[in-house]
Length: 132
Image (tube, rainbow, N blue to C red):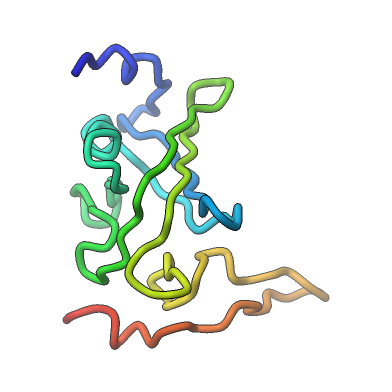
């Protein structure tokens, strides 16, 4: 496959691009992560989300530990060519769990009355999701 499409992305100084992951059916924003060239190329090829883990300094195939994979339907680039948007189906649990806290979305905290409040339930105990 030709890599010209990857050259059109404005990568940051670390060779990364921010990625917003949105659920195809509901439109919910599930998570924010980073990709390098290899992660984005693998995502496009496999049609499953592969990210770059800054904390682990390695590729991270979403669901590799939890079984909560993301089937990729659409990959979009914003007008400045510096943010990627994935449209996915969250697999592995019904309803889909995208967050390592066992919630549907990583954006489960709402600012209200001067404080952050959890507004989405834990769907599955993280201890039951991740093998240690």
